[in-house]
Image 1 (cartoon, rainbow, N blue to C red):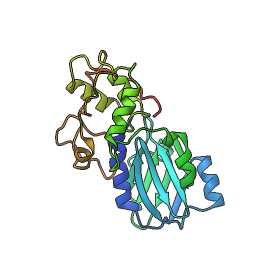
Image 2: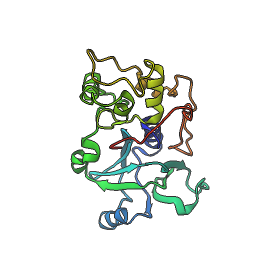
Image 3: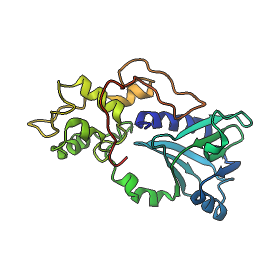
Image 4: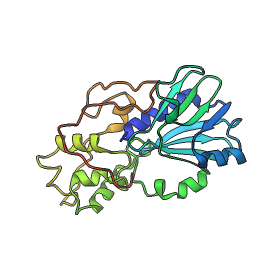
Length: 244
């Protein structure tokens, strides 16, 4: 599953391509989006901002309308020039947002909905999330408190709980535990005599193109805004993230 850093980069790519520009064409294979488009057309609205919240990608449109997508395991956003050949088959297309300069295409995205900004703020999918590690407003104290509240869990399990920290998946969980005390993945608990500082300052690293292992990383493709980057973790155990 794409993790918070991948969604952050995808949102940044989409924002640079679309922000401030009117939508000239909207297409979708999803009935719930088509119904909204029929009642209040998407074409003609301006893309105001594209941002990420944890593993959620939000496209904010004029007229108080937000497109929320979650990529789950197989979804991705691609950016193309109009008329450019897609790298994925048309049968995988779920959403097309086109401006005069670019096409943003969501492929195999299983979660996509239009919401007003107010309704989205109340939606448990976002309102229950913990502090977003890639947000400029990331609250370290709140993050540590939420982790300590899950004191019965191992550190690895707690890091995957999106209600504690938003955006971490198996890649970062594995790297944090691998870099931490021996046995942290299975033995150490979040509750203890004193909270340790969070070991990985990720926002600056990811914004600069860093990888989970601390290397230079591989920049995300403009063609595939949702492609995976960073170091492989095949040699370390992994599990599903609760409350994705």
